[in-house]
Structure formats: C-alpha cells, structure tokens
Image 1: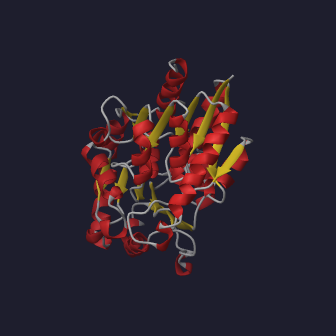
Image 2: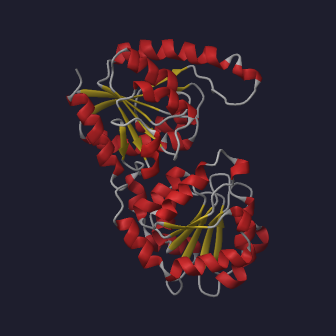
Image 3: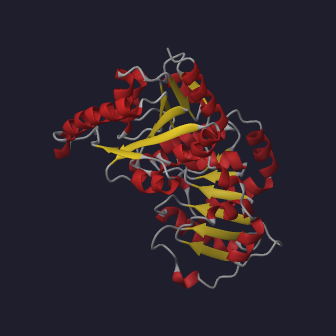
Length: 357
C-alpha cells in the first residue's frame, strides 16, 4: 500500500484543502498519516477522519519584532527532529503540504530523507513558510496564473485549490426552507470571512431597502454580529456562521458578495458563482486579498469593489451590474483551467510516487 503524509495547519485554510484530498486518496488505496502541531486547529479538524495524527513542536517565523522571535526558532528546530523521527517510522512514499508554519519542519525533514514533497501555495505570492519549503519541494501547486512567475521554473503547476466534494452537493430547496425564502426572487449570499466584516455588514444592511426590492439576502455576518433589529425583516436572513448547511446556501445563491481569501474564492470558482469581491485592505493584511481579487477580475470571474470605495450606493450599483451580467461570469468560470484541483494534485502525487528514485 502507498503511504502519504499530509501536513499543514495554523488556520482552517491550511487544513481544509488537505481534507478535500482525503476521499480521493483513500479511493486510490493510500495509507494516510497527518503531521501537525500540538494545539493547532488541524488536530481538531483531522480528528473526524480516523487518520493517525502526529504532533510536532513548531513556532511562528515572524517578519516583525516580537519577544517570541528568540524562542520560536528553537521550537522549529525541535520540530524538525521530531518530524524526521516520525517520517523514518512511517516511511511515506510522498509528503503533501498545504503550508502554515507547522509544515516547515515536516517538509524540510522530508527533504533531508529524500522523500518527494509536493506543496501548495494558496495566495498570489508565497508566504514565508512556503518560501522556506520551496527549495526541497519537487512540485509547487498554485491557484493563480500570476503566481507561476514567482516560483521556480519546472516546479510550478497551476492546479487551483482542492475543494471538498460535499460543497458541490448542496440542496437548494433545503436552503430556501431554512431561510424562509421563495423562488420568486434571486438570492444574494454575503460572506464576510470567518470572523465577519464590520465594513461589509454595515454596507449590506444600509443597502437592504434597495436590495430587497429585487433580491433576497442571506448574510453570514460572523460571531456576535447578528443585528437583532433585523431579525424579522422579510427576505433577509442572518447567520453567525454555517457548518453542514453551507453547501445548501451556496446551492441556493445566485450571486455572492465575499472577501477575497484564496480558498473562499476558489470555492466560488468551482461552484461557478458570479461574485462581487471586497478584499481585505492592505492596511489590515499583507495585501494578498487585493492581489487575489485583481487576478480573478482580470480572468473574468469577478467584479471587485475596494473597501475604501464601499458604501450603500456603490454596493447596490455593483450588485446590479453583477446580476445583469451573471451569465458572462459563469461562462468565464466554466472555461477555467483551475478547476478539478483534486484530480490534478492527486495526479502529481501519483507521479511523485511512481518516479521516486
């Protein structure tokens, strides 16, 4: 039986693409193991899949001054030793990494043991963890055509991001019932990121009188961000967040308003949902969402509205523009080379196993 070690963690975005690969890997008779951190979100998420989990020490490698900069490198070195010992015991045929700081000691240890490594970079430009892993990686998968220019020639492969198959199996009727919506009006889905967005929430709620004339709105507003004054507003339903129901809401949505996180927009692409992206501004991030959004706009998948320009008027204007041209955006997404990421990545994994010296 072929063996694979998956790694990646720190945030859900560094884990869910790994989870998306699991059914296909099991179908192909891979014995799957996971190396992550002791207390990261990856440990909780992977616990649902009956996969052996091995924790290692890790530390965040920061670009800014912090007292932990003095102690964390020692944790990374310790994690490298632990990962090397685990890999020697498992003897995997290949390692696949989704990034995050826990991946650094794992991938570097695999490289030292001549184990083939495939890594995935979600954002337009590689993060620090993946920059440290690229030198020992055999292939680097990415989501955006522009990223190919930032990666070593011969290693870079445009795959898109692996999407969980359950997201493609939503029940529109179940979502209409959950939201108490009808089939008479189209549905706008609003996603402000896992923590919600104050700016997007404010603009959407200000625009409701106009939007509800022609649309129904389902709003994922984030923890503790439900507006109690709007609980009985007809045609408008709020959720702090969704779990199993998310696939149904996505199936129901005609258009989507969203932040521009790499995994989120790749899911919208896979589902071919016309979308209005409001990226996190540079002052609140390292600017990746701005680059992600610009790439999707240039490929004809999205309309972009920068947060600095966001208000009730601009939001309504862009929503109507998006809805009126929705067929054009669906057509562009249907022709994307970033679809079927699971099959593309598993193909690379199989090639690495077959061609291993």
